[in-house]
Image (cartoon, helix red, strand yellow):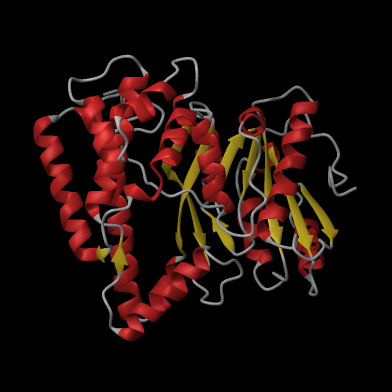
Length: 379
């Protein structure tokens, strides 16, 4: 039964299945489901909760919410995964595989496979905004942040670091929209892709090979898989979700790990370190130059730029350029060839990085003042 989780075919009116992996989340799952049940579009989606390896009342709490909220079309699956597979990567993969398979079996490749977390509360217009953005994309990553009440309860020093980290990511996203703009992902946008709010078409999910069944950072691995097939990924600022600020991380490398790290940094009084701006700029410029070469429309210095940034002689990477191959696959292969030679900069304090990225954005806008707002996003 695990393969398909025993799910019935999707209803004719079901446009999206929202999957939630949950392990011992009885204390929070009610809030997550109430937020989904309150969506005006609730009749257009169902929710599949996988209570895996639970020793608490996660499943019964979920079923009680469903009984009190008839708009919530909820399927609850309970199972125990074997040791070594009892982590969120496998649980989320099983869920997304199952709902993608049932959309495809119904010959509905545009059926939406969505996922969130048990400790996450989606915004009141989350479904509507997801549907809107999926009309022009293969996948949509929502903007996920700590909920307002929990954020307000954080120590001041932690809140300051968290705010700076968000400002850093925003500057990074704006620079990316200038350096390597994509028509499906115009500014304004963000640059995160986390399992607390992801949606993807069933067909695109299958073409990407599904979610990697890894114990950490399965969401980032899935983004890489989508990029390798040139899926249109939208980092939507309109699709919003609010997750827990709990320090006790359930997943190594997940949001809880970040929050715990913020607390440690604040307690130690150390600067919060992030990627060096030059590293970010090199990655973006190298990808943009490679994209132009792949498209057969390179600028005069693009071959030299790619060679310098990736640390490869032209003969080491030009042979990998095949126009018929997805650009994302080409980029992936060249990054693999480049290896550790590309990491040349130490991490820097977040305030220094923000200032440098904002300066780079201002410089780009001065040279290309209309590019970031161009409707096509091409450049």
